[in-house]
Length: 158
Image (tube, rainbow, N blue to C red):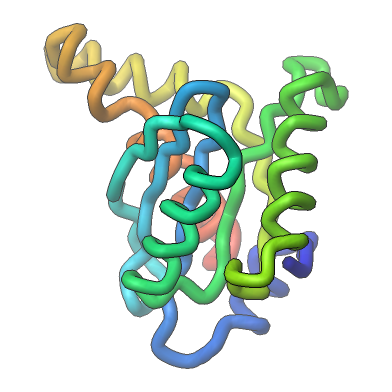
C-alpha cells in the first residue's frame, strides 16, 4: 500500500479502467462504497461484518478484485480537535497489516478525515424518515460513500 496525501495523487496512480473504493473502518463493521468508472460519483456498496483480521482482509481483497478497485479512500477517524486517538491507530494498524499480506493488491490509499461523516449520514437518514432497523443496515456503507464523495469533490473542486 502506498499512502498518498491528496486526491490528485490518488487519481494519478490509478490504473486504467479501475474504480475508487471508500472504506469506513469500524470496530464491528467495514462500510464500503464504490466510485463510478469516471471517478465522479460514490455509491454505497456493501458492509462487511467484522470477525477477525484474516477473514476481514480476505473479504475486502475479494471485493477489490471482483470490482476492479484501483485505489482506496479510507476514513481517518480523527478526534474532534484534529488529534489522533486510538481509532486512528487502529486504522493505521489495519492498513499496515493489509500491506503485509501477499494476497492483497498494492493499492494507493488516501486517508480522508471522516469527522462527523456518520452523524451527517444519520441526519440524512432521519430526515428521510428511515426506520431504525434500516438505518443500522445502511449507515456504514453510506458513511463510506460520504467519505469517498468528499475526496472526489475535493479532487474536482466542488
